[in-house]
Image (cartoon, rainbow, N blue to C red; front, side, top):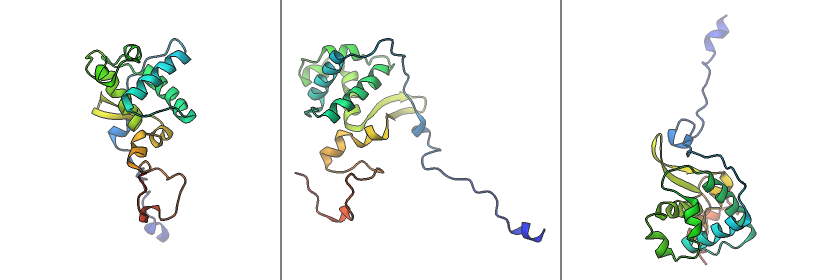
Amino acid sequence: MAGNAFLAPAVRANIWEEGEAQCHVSAPERVLSDDLNDAQLADFMKVSRTLTGMPLASLQDIRLGREYLVRFAKLNVPGIDLGKLLTARDQTTDAIMNDKDIRAAAEQLIYLWYLSAFFLNTSVGPAWVYGTTDQYEQGILWKVIGAHAPMMPMKPFHRDYWAREANLA
């Protein structure tokens, strides 16, 4: 009995971000009635190249583009219309961004490629709605600034990489 006096109370783990409401937000989604096709992917990639200013031509870019197309097609937010955005595939960046009917969708597409997230009004207020960790790691932003995604392992890992001079070429 005397030993019981020294038992510590149960410890509750504090999982990183578990309690953050913003880390649990989701976007309203619609059920896709039809499979997305290669023509839609081609249009999505074309308008993505225009809006991001990036070539987005590698197999990895195409794979990521397909994932983003599915995420975008499921997005069920008034004023963000993927169909209208895809019809703008041959327009210039200025024309797309100055078109009030597709500007909101264009902004979301840029966020998606650079940060792998949508920026939406949610139940907890305006919030970033992220996809997978792989999508987060592949965000264009990290390539542009010459860094790896925060809180993700650097690939390939180089010991003491932070102590070396930056290579921005």
